[in-house]
Image 1 (tube, helix red, strand yellow):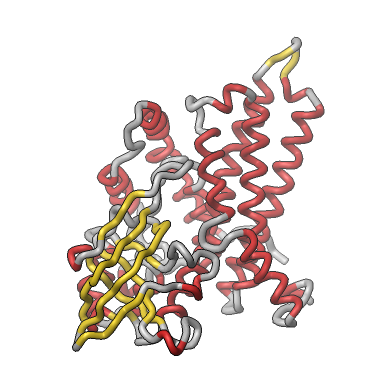
Image 2 (tube, helix red, strand yellow):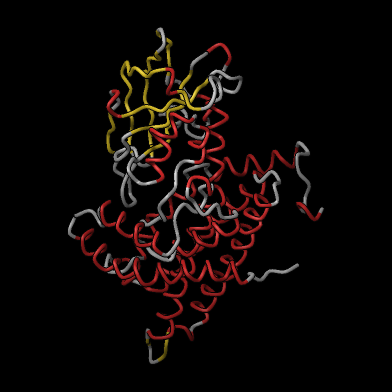
Length: 390
């Protein structure tokens, strides 16, 4: 086994690292100042400027196929870059991306939705979660009734990321109740905001906030069906599965940055005549944090490697998501404890991370859903203990 990066991987990773440190991290002080003043931490226009700067470095469309102008990077490389992005609390992501299922668009839809999204001219959101259908995505109720060559959408989606900013939504709706959600009874639609849906901001404990999307007799032409009629739930699961190794990849970056802050503080903060890092209680917190961080790293990298090998990544991605999300919550808690009262203030990013990372155990598959998937795979013989080495 070779756990090292090759020259190309290291060069790409280091270039991304340099960009984040030089162009993005310096914005954190102003972001925190604005948030303390009750203002938005960073404007969309500022994030867009950063993306265009990154494009000059060649970073555009990490996962986007080359025929659409992207880098089409392997999953392992994407994971490494998302870890670098996690080093900053600025909500930055490299541009040139689109929802993975948007690549199922036909040629006309690509011109109207896919390419403008890749170029940053349009903003999308993916809408499957409903007030009564979170972890149980098969319980969605938002309906689409055919009326001539159109479909009429009625219902509500909730906790939709980008729902407040999006000018179009990818909406999974029930088109044939008798077939059931898993039996081909749902379809994905591309629905422009101007077609009549509205969004309502949901305040949360973390930065930013998702939205509820309300559809009252929203008329959508049949040409706006994404993929095939009855393919909605299948596309929805592909969308959700994408994030299950990316989310903990990002968490690794947060963990690395936060743990380094703890180490630096432990070496410089003096109480009772000595640095607090000389106290066993502090040493053990640092040791536990480093061990869990490293364990999560290999679960995440194995999940990404599984994708690159063309193997079914669901089991390994669920383990990476489950452990990575729990790890970063425990790690940030330790880092706050080491910083004491200062860590609890809004002068440092720690309390912001504390609120932010709690979401990782909930969205795109709760801890409980990951445990269900992992245990089911073993109990039903879908996988073996020991994975690909079994």
